[in-house]
Length: 163
Image (tube, rainbow, N blue to C red; front, side, top):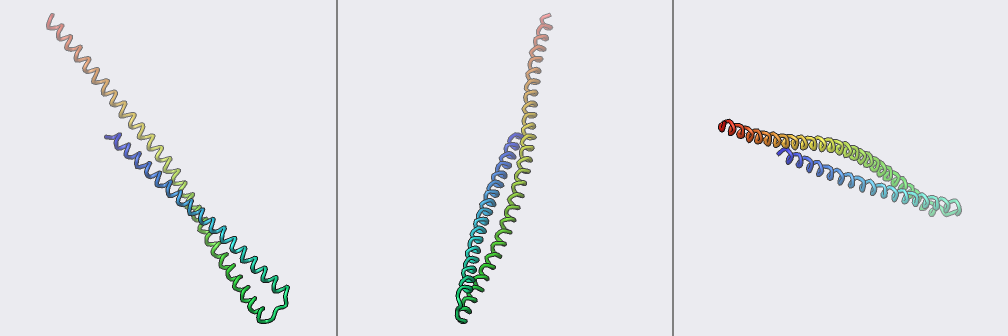
C-alpha cells in the first residue's frame, strides 16, 4: 500500500537523478569539444599571423617589382582577412564555451538541490515506513493482549460456573 507507493517514488527519484547525471555528462563533453576547437582556432590564427609576419619580412628584404608587390599585397590582405575571421570564430566559440560552463554549473546546482530534496523525501518516507511498522507492531501487541484477556475471561467464567 503506502510503502509500495513510497518505493515507486524512490524509484522515480533515482531515474530522475540518473537522467540529470547523463545530461551533465553530455554538457561536459560538449564543453570539452568546444575548448578543443577553440585551442585549434588559436593555433591556426597563430600560424596565419606567422605567415603574415613572414610576408612582411619578404617585402622589407627585397625590392620587388610593382607587379609582384601588388600580388604580395593581395596575399597579405587575404591572410589578414583570414586571421581576422578566425579571431571572430574563436571569440564565438569562447562565448559558447562560457555559456556551456554556466549551463553546466546551473545543472550541477539543480542536481545538488534535487539530491538534497530527494534525501529529505527519502528520510520522510523512511520515517513514514517506520511509523507504519510501529503501528502494525502495536496493533499486533493489542491483538495478543485482547486474546490473552479473552482466555483469562473464559477461565474466570469457567471458575464461576464451577462455583
